[in-house]
Image (cartoon, rainbow over all chains, first blue to last red; front, side, top):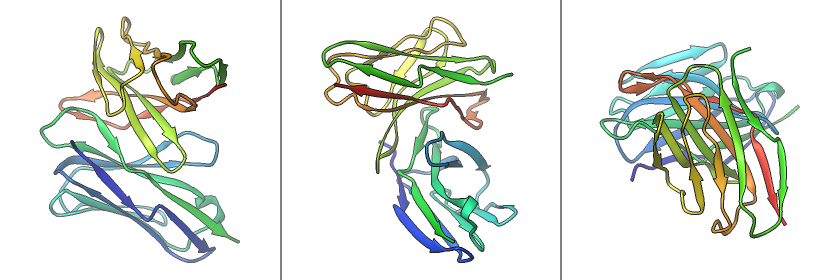
Amino acid sequence: GQQVMQIPQYQHVQEGEDFTTYCNSSTTLSNIQWYKQRPGGHPVFLIQLVKSGEVKKQKRLTFQFGEAKKNSSLHITATQTTDVGTYFCAGLNQGGSEKLVFGKGTKLTVNP
Amino acid sequence: DGGITQSPKYLFRKEGQNVTLSCEQNLNHDAMYWYRQDPGQGLRLIYYSQIVNDFQKGDIAEGYSVSREKKESFPLTVTSAQKNPTAFYLCASSIVYGAVNTEAFFGQGTRLTVV
C-alpha cells in the first residue's frame, strides 16, 4: 500500500537556525498537506500543495512539492521557540482511495 | 461554533472491556477519519468514511469497529480484541471536494488508558 516516509524523526536546533523536514511517497500523490502538532495538542492544518513543482510560502515557512509529485519539503527560516512541535506531511494517493496517509512526523525542538 | 468534538478527553478502562469513543462534527463534512497516535509512530489510520452508512478499513483496523449512521457522527469502538489499546485517538473530518479531499480538521483527541 501507499507509504509516506518522513525524515528526520527528530531535529534539535538553536533559535535562529534553519530547519527542514522531508517527505517521500512510494506512490504519486494528487496532493500533499502539512500539519503542525504542538506538544499536548492535535494536528492543525498548515497548507496544501497540488501542482507539480509548486512552492508556497507562509512567512518564515516554505513548502515545496516535487516535480514528480512524490516528495515534498517544509523549510523554516530562522526558527523561533514558537515553532516547537511535530510537523507531519500527509499525502493523498493519485487515482487511489480518498484517504490521507500521514508520515511519522518530525519533532522539532528549539533551544532559546 | 463549528468544529469537531471528541469525548471524553481522558478515558480509563479495564482490560477486556469494550469502549466507545465519541466523535461529532457540525462542519457538514462528508468524510470522517479515526487515527491512532503512539509515540514515534505518527498517525496511523484506523477507519475512514466518505459517506453515511459506508466506511473502509484503514491500516490498523483489527480490534476496532465503527459506524456512520449520521453524517455528523462517527463513533469508534475499541474492542477487547485490540491487543494494545492504550493510545491517543484522533478523529478528523474533511470536505470531499470532487475527488480530492481538502484539509482535515482534527478533534482534541481522546487519551485511552487500559489497565
